[in-house]
Image 1 (cartoon, rainbow, N blue to C red):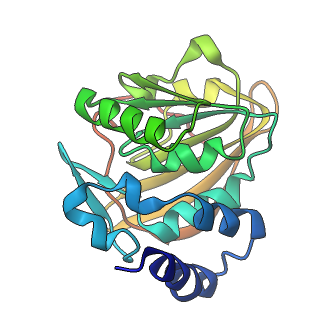
Image 2 (cartoon, rainbow, N blue to C red):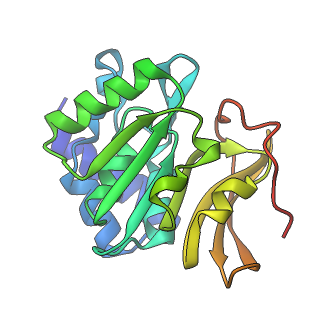
Length: 217
């Protein structure tokens, strides 16, 4: 497969037509080789409009969802980012290219180690991959300018919202199959948040998502 051509086709045929037009986001998708973050057996599907199995019940988000995340959160070079659900490490790599530092939490130890290897091979040094239940966040490094939840969940956990900086942004896919909506949550002040629905979608849920105390907007 000609990966460069496939990457170009992914952007022109899947992503631009869906109104992802932010140049910074598109440039990142061109610059960071998605094919090196997928399992070898699925390398030829790296740019397909589908989720890719990672094992242990986890999947890699569709390229269009990843692009929409980047366009929504607009990470800046001085910002600290928390990602919940590392998977292969690709989303963390995209966020790290724009951020000062990314902390990413993966509940499955095998996937966490795979992500560390993938990120190291790509020469990305400003991502720290932690093993644990990401829905509890990482309070020790909070508050975060941006939080990205790389998987679906019924509601946004209160623990994550509490770790968001004032004026910070949180991306989450909320709901239950087949009805889910991508939301961008902004922290207004110490006690108040606003949530905006970006688009409808359906994706794999995060493990342990049920049972966490949630915040009602």
